[in-house]
Length: 273
Ligand SMILES: Nc1ncnc2c1ncn2[C@@H]1O[C@H](COP(=O)(O)OP(=O)(O)OP(=O)(O)O)[C@@H](O)[C@H]1O
Image (cartoon, rainbow, N blue to C red; front, side):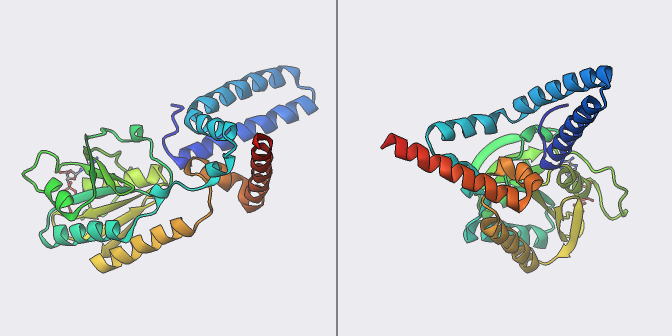
C-alpha cells in the first residue's frame, strides 16, 4: 500500500501528510484534545512510513552529507539523458517493426528510477545495451519474450516480457490491450514514456501521462524523443528521487536549498583542510 511506486502517487502521499500536519496544528490551536491526539499519532505513523518509502534517498543523502558532497544529491543522474545513438537505435528498431507489422511495447524510463514493483510481472532480466537488432529479436512473434513489454533504463534494456497494469479508461474499439497497457503504466508512473507498435496496422504511438499520441511517423517519434531527452538534460538539476520535493517547494525553495547546501558543503570541505 505504502510503496512509492510512482511520482504521482508519492505526490498524493506527501500532500496527505501535509494536510494531516495542518489538521494537527489547527486542532491544537482550537484545543480539540482528543482530535489533536489522534491526528498526532497519524502524523507520526505517516512520517515513519515516508521514512521507509524514501529510505534509499535518505541513505544516499546521508552518505553524501558525510562526504561533504551534498550538492551532488541535487544533480540529475546521467541516465536521464540518452545519447543520440540510443534514440537512433530505438527509433530505427521501431520503424522496422512498424514496417513489418510486428507488435511491440516499449517502456522508456525518463527521470528518476521506476520502482519495478509497479509492473504486474517484472518479466525476464536482459540487462543488455540497446540495439536495433536486440529489440527486433525480442519482438519476433516466435520468441518466448515477444509477449509483454520491454523496459529500458538509460541506454540498457533491463527486461523483456514485462506485464504492465492496464488502464481503466474506455477506449476506441481499434485499441486493444497493448495500447491499454501503455496508457495504464503511464497513468500511474510519470517518469516514463511508452512506445507502441500495432501488430494489426503497424501504426506507431507514444503514451505519456496516460495520453496516447498517434499515429506517428518514425521521424516524428524521433523528434518527440529528442525533444523530451533534450529537455531532461537542460531541466532543473534536482536528483530524480527529489523531483517530487522539488515540485512541492518550487523554484524559490530549490534555490534556497541549493544555496544552503552549497554553503554547508564548502564549510565542511574547509574544515577538512
Ligand atoms: N498488460 C500487458 N502488459 C504488457 N503487454 C501486454 C499487456 N496486455 C497485452 N499485451 C501485449 O499486447 C498483445 C495483445 O495485443 P492486442 O492485439 O490485444 O492489443 P492492440 O492494442 O489491439 O495491439 P495491436 O494493434 O498490436 O493488435 C499481447 O500479445 C501482449 O504482447
